[in-house]
Image (cartoon, rainbow, N blue to C red; front, side, top):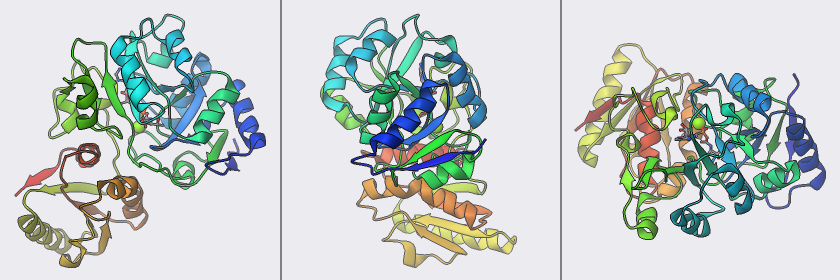
Length: 351
Ligand code: TXA
Ligand code: MG
């Protein structure tokens, strides 16, 4: 299959190109498109065959359902059996935006779309291209991140093509995504709302609206948790991992720098090509084969924006080992550390 690349302006996408993409979706095809978080790989949520094709293209385990993207609230009422008051409050405050709500699903939705669960993950993305595509396609669009399963999520169309060129019908290229980490996944089916995956909407801002919010033990991703009966299927699979081994050093800054340099020497003596994933403030302190700063420690927005791109760059540069500085877990920091800890398969050194 030849993958069509449709370049569009992120703010005023050409109607013609959106139509081309929407026609592919309507015919059961796969189209990657930008959202404010990462690029998604879209298919018609109500077409079981099309949704199955997403799993195939991504080599994604079948028990991990993608998020259903909508362009209006009215569609939510068709996908979910009930929309509780607190869901309506959250949609009003955060949609369009990086918040995914887990609700009880309606029977109209094909089994494969929800991987056989009795719940459904829904969000309205804050991106003109995504919204235009959904509207033109006249259906909700199921879209996981547009990467091969297990790889870092794509924040540019180039990343999408690195993983999926020839495996999907088209990609709408509207340049790099803004936020860089995925949406927050919030389960509203239990009594107490629970964050299953931290993301673009922070724990703190959800608490402001809801009062009480639980942070699932998986959300911190501090250690591998027993995964027998997890509520968010994505949790138990390998995630965000570059080819290189990733190691995180967490703790007080000066000790962290010392420890990282120690580890760099150790791995280099073993003949490994070693990269350090650091911050603007600390980059001068390291001696390694590759040194990549994520941005200023004071600017978690910039760090989130650069995270997946730099993980991919280390692979392109053939690093064997990536040693990453731990970061604070406030605000967006929780989502950043969640992705890093998973990329590291919980390989964390505390100093
Ligand atoms: O920002 C995002 O959320 C991006 C863009 C493309 O919208 N999408 C994304 O999708 O990250 P994906 O499929 O890579 O991640 C969806 C997450 C997975 O961890 C999955 O397990 C969880 O949502 N999920 C989906 N349906 C669920 C459900 N019914 N109950 C609990 N978790 C669910
Ligand atoms: Mg993903």
